[in-house]
Length: 66
Picture 1: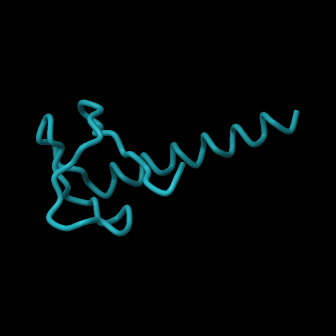
Picture 2: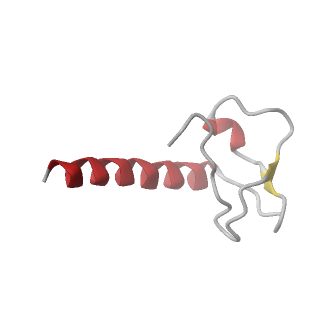
């Protein structure tokens, strides 16, 4: 994960969203609309994506310890 994480749309995988203002935090993407399929991101979508990212980082860290 870098400074500008790219959250994919849960429906189509697109990483471009329509937002009313420039997001400063991940929570600011709540309600953003996918430019490809018009699906609205929910807080649950953002939390699920973030959880998977953390799990991947932790898994890679432990894998490197072996």
